[in-house]
Image 1 (cartoon, rainbow, N blue to C red):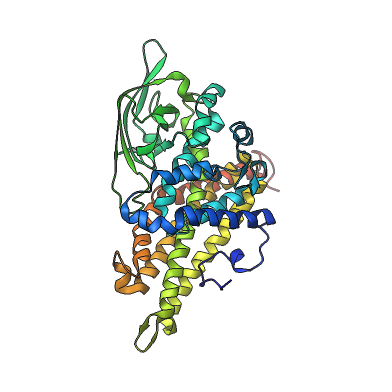
Image 2 (tube, rainbow, N blue to C red):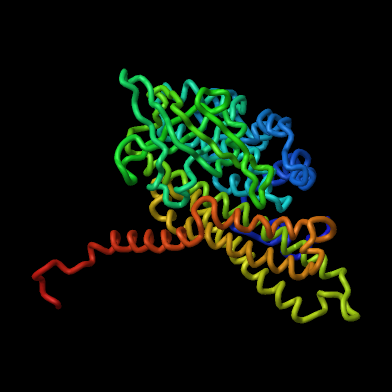
Length: 441
């Protein structure tokens, strides 16, 4: 097997030792790469050029149970076995799945360097189903989970609005009960909803009472072909195949049984969901950075200027070195994160790693920005052209805002991370505070 281009693969795939990966993880990576390359990676650039991924691709992933890996680990074993899913690709039993398997899947799904094609398949499943699994009533789960887990129906997560992005507490979409108390009437708009255009349902943040976070609830809202729902695609700078959607809701009638959990608890449910979203974004974005930098490295090995290859120019090597150091540091941090996720319970991880997850996601966007800019500059005119040798660098560079804004914009997450760290520190050190009136000694 030929040696990979520098920076093109994580160290554990370059033959270097790692304390994190077991034989199960290595077997999974090989099977996962083979499936994803055949059914996604080799076609991803063509589909992104065309602006859409064939519906048959989603069906192939669903039939192979290859949507399940995008759920948070550990997997919902009881439910998966109930619908007939006992393993993934015959390699990993669902009860043996951990967050390192998840990270491998997420990394492989971004190996084309493009987020759109993979996101078109997994985003709704990954973030729309978990609140239903964690907080939905048994009746609600029985009604909807079988079709959703098997990919017979699609779902999205609908939080953001034209005037409420990272400021989730500012959501204005309302859900008011009808006079007979049997339904909610949902009114408002949702914007930048990934996979929305194909979704039968949305796990939707709505306002069921007064202002602020305490007035928010989660509701499973029917979308496709449902009265009062109007959806249209939104054109964005990158990730053009992901199905970014604008949703208008006009007196949409939803049974009260579709409330996920309790009224007024929506903000708490959303926040616990964000940690999985932000960590998987960080993993995928770091792979994008790897693709951009490796493409530039390979180009610099061949391209000649001023009588020598670009890689022989000290200034070029310096630029690659700086970006490469950021990339590999970010990946090492991510590996540490996913390992910690295998050792901590969910509730503990939410507290101990919540702020740091926000920080890792923000940092991933900054690393991608550096690596993508590095690639575009080293490709020169080719990196500023939408076709040809530098096409992948140009496309990845256009997707940088798509890494730094969704899942919580960068500045908001940086602030959130420090506030969470301060909160944890103050809580854990409170026992060290001197009681009032006690001796200074």
